[in-house]
Image 1 (cartoon, one colour):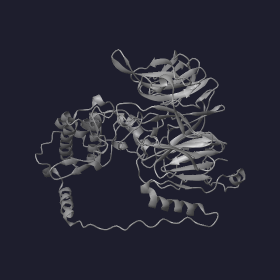
Image 2 (tube, rainbow, N blue to C red; image 1 turned 30 degrees about the vertical axis):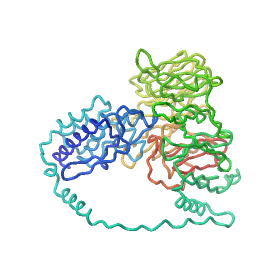
Image 3 (cartoon, rainbow, N blue to C red; image 1 turned 180 degrees about the vertical axis):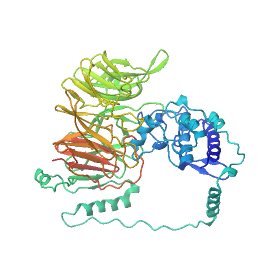
Image 4 (cartoon, rainbow, N blue to C red; image 1 turned 90 degrees about the horizontal axis):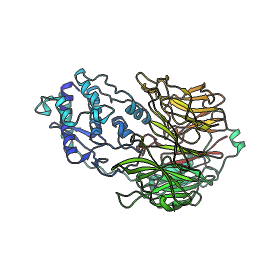
Length: 617
């Protein structure tokens, strides 16, 4: 659109935001498709995820809602979305109107979210006079953005009537749509076809069985009926060895949940899966790891914190202002047990499990201190629920991940790694970010070896677990794109080698989104080899190493798994899940719609509404 049109559009949308915020609301999903252009004025629509200012969060810590390309950085990190977040989104809308492209391009959700949080906006094609205004709207810091009233004044449109600045072809298109409204005729759509009957002959092909399952979902999906299909109960080593080279192993079984499914953990021969299309009303079920048959179902609504290792669940509270109870999950039977003592009702605001191990459960939440609500970490003895210690953290350390290593509790935030004594919470050491490493990644089990811990983030650092001393650093100079900074996901250590996923060189080039899979020597951080995936994969989860093959979660329903042979440094095969991507948004945008866990001779993969058990050789 020409500059005068963008100014008129922006000034009127700024007025609309003033009215929305004045009514005590934030929109949270402002984007081009939620704006209707009429001859009189632009109209903002779709308040489906709008929230009242000051209302209790509906999403949990770390979860995100909205459209990635137009999210504010704070929204992309799962934090509160306040009025400045709507101004950020409006800046993105105006960039699109002025240039025909959004400010943060990328093919994969993870690509876009990373650039929203850390990259500079692409203002190519934006008129020079608008660049300073839109750059201010797209400031990473909410305080750096103008409020809607200031934005309206900065855009300073002189057009009294909106229609007078609209291009002729656009006005004609509005007229055609208006006239067409009176020419609509109702049509009767045919009913759904009858479901395909399951084959009666022995040994049905995988394709036929999957088609039968798909037909059953079409007929019964509205009633919430789950369809289960098993190709075979297990795959023998001989079968795996005789598989044709380059051919992915067939799933031992496939479970069709009929709703969004996420694998949480595998314990005692049972795969624990959370199921449900509503992120705030999900239930759980257990699948036999060998056959894929349902062994239990939980009717209670549950959530599984990302750092709880799948054995701690949180129930929903009937009161919006209260926090749900915490349960220990018996994976083999599906039983839930309330924790005893102080763990039954922790004196923390919004308690969230950080890690468990060594007989303790660490929770993060808010506590009052000096008349303010500050973030704290608390350690509880699981046996009797007694709180052993409370460790207050700086305000910037709001979201922690961690693990128990010997007599230490190690936790990381976006700015620091801290070691606490497991028994009393005494701080043993702290490593904070500096100008060489601005960000710290999540700390997961599996990043330890021989008294060392590998810290990811904007570089890799190897620390002495006992003292916190930095033994070596790697990767700060691997700049993935002009003006950007590197970032490395959760590492995993095996023997004397660590494996990690990092952002690739062509990460933000159109059609070239990619990651680098790196292998480093644990002793000195020397790079042994690397492989570019030529596609986006997830940074957060740790890779899984099984029988000489490294498996990485991609976040993509159609191809949920990326495998690399450690001997050849090449993919041994490509897995196609057979599941169709129905276009649903993931419940947690940074995680996509897949999850991966490993146990014994199988990888258990959830992709969309399916769960697969994949034999490993």
